[in-house]
Image (cartoon, rainbow, N blue to C red; front, side):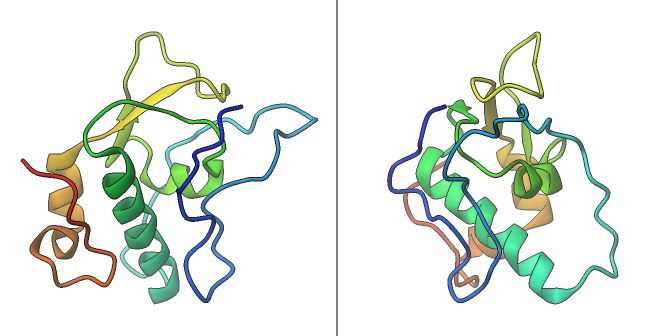
Amino acid sequence: MLKHRGFPGRLPSTDFQFTIRRANPKGVTPLTKRQRYADRRTPDKRADEGFLGALIAHFGDQPFERGNLDAGRLSWLFGREVVPAEDPFDPASYDALLRVDMRAAQAAFPQLFDGSSEFAFDTWEE
């Protein structure tokens, strides 16, 4: 399992985890598309925004290996802002390639792109 060095381990000042320390001995947790409802709690929305901001700052629009990125946090974005970068795609593999769909990310989280978010990035250019 690839460990993404320099990637934040969690949302600052919270228990929202972004990475895992070691591979699951019972098997890889598969990525699934989770439904995001409009009435989600504000801290959950903030965690999604922070995680997506970190993904864009770290990887931009380039494919990246799932590695030690948390499956639960990825699943909230999977199928929308984070999409498979390979075909066939194995959702239960630490080696699976993913990428950020910048158009979907900008539509769902415009504050990351206009600089009004505390998680806005400055490393990606269109």
